[in-house]
Image (cartoon, rainbow, N blue to C red; front, side, top):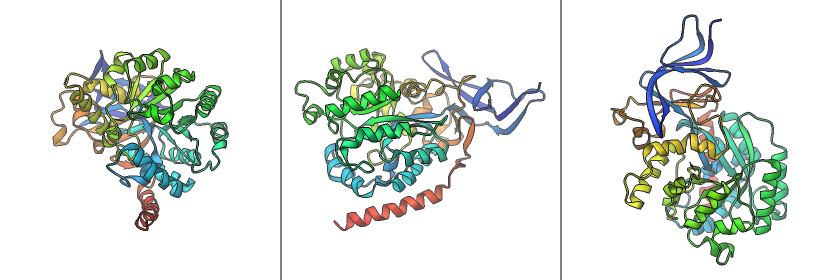
Length: 439
């Protein structure tokens, strides 16, 4: 019986695993029913047909990038308060702006803007944590992205949860009311040990365990965090461990200030970590010990954090920064090679989020992939996949496919009206600017 494909990509170069790294091989890719069904050198065989045929000459096919930590709706606050330390940035600018301007409508439109930015720069999966996450879920659903969505839990009034005493009830209701989806799933996002009491952390972790959803938390982002949480001689990691919170269901974000003992705890408990190098650099928070964590076999994914502290959601740029930051910080150019960072942004990132069937281009895997246009001067010649880390940028992405569905074609988003989204966000930003001017 003749083979039929929903999408067939011919004559491209394919990023494939090779030993501890990757290689580029020439070939074609067939997609059917949301899965990769053919990967090889041959084109369409005799009698084979495809609903959509993509000419891949000059394009590199690679797994869609996995952004393991983002606050999508914070696109509204892009550039609002730059060049400040974390606590000043949070307490004097971001928290007040959120209290005044965050609404379900804001989260919906600003998350759509984030989704558009991520898709156009090659990200197919995101782990997002914020407020009004029902609205964020609607935005991601319409975008066609894959996402894990964490309802934020903190111990002070926040948008959507005016009474902090209802924070656990709110996150439970979010999970219980989450509509069935093949692309989206709920999570618990306990903001940090310094915004959540020990009781709140224990209760939030219990909900995540009971509902069998991921548990995200900002951890050890800045020096002296133990002073903020009143942990005494305990480090933030040891503090969470003393509360019996740490296990393989925990995804700890940032993990900049870790001792050897802290890393040993994370490894022993099977925790996963997300590093956000550009946000950490911009806020002056420090440099996460990524090579040391990887040496302990701790899965480390890559995140952008929010547009308010980065200020973009381009994971290609994040890969470049991650690799180079480790080298200069340790003065060892061989540390964190490009091949390893590529893995962090694809298959290891997927593993961090517990997604076993994305992150690699192999028959049977879900068809989440991107095509990078390598016909520009700065990507010529392309000797190895290293240049995808050190030379490529999000603007080089030509095509994006999520779950076998074409969502970006020739640099244009097919699932959303990006011009409308930007107009809506500009209108919201006008309110923010007017309020800031009136101070």
